[in-house]
Picture 1 (cartoon, rainbow, N blue to C red):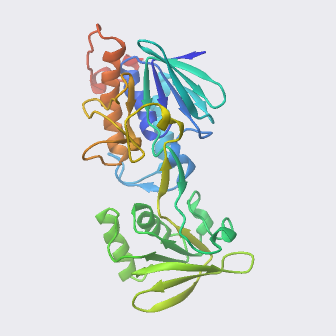
Picture 2: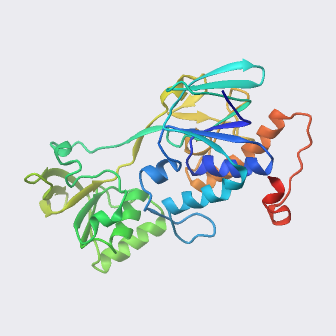
Picture 3: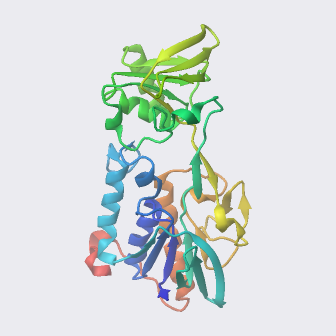
Length: 335
């Protein structure tokens, strides 16, 4: 039987940083994740993707951010159960939960923090006939290693942050980058939109708006993508790789059966401390929802920080919580 103070479901960036904040309050953490390694989506889906909104880092690769977080929490000696999915929870007594994984591992804790990101997820695939025939043969929905596209011709489809960020990044890697979007406006960060427009004007990428990818073709591997445009009709573009980036389809999985208040596949929380409707269970990061919610790593760090303050008071209602600045006490002073 594994016992801990806070059981964190999800070993992504928000879950990892929560270990640090809990450690400052001398709370022990155990993390569980269905993926075989820590890092969540940042490790599994886009370890080489640059992130631009982490304070103090003008740009940092997703995988490097995870490495830094693991180094940051190492002094607090967190424990991990990886490659196992949180399956069921049971209330053992007034302030103790027992969680069982799909492989039978049992973990007991007075507090559970759900930091499962988007939950179980899979890429949204465009409805293109025969697309599946070229998966791993030129069609990828997730970019894990940008070097795969070195000196290649690629076509990216999408209008969100991932499509914009990878277009910018791969413009320095690939021989030719074409970005196709069905509208003229984009959903991503304005700064990224500006950069893409500048690259297009400088002739460093091909930008085609009011257009959609409609067909894929090739002998044994992808060789071209057919697109339909409003202004210029149908076009056939020779490519080595086609990368549709239309986001992920989230599913809560077993968490959705735990009696939590759910709103559109996200867990409703009280923004005072990010607690759920079940005392002792909190939800932080992309998996929660509230008015004004922003799905940013930065926001998740804030939520985890406030959550552990509340968790301490929940576990030790009679203890005095003394807040200290790490600039004064350092980290070793909290171990």
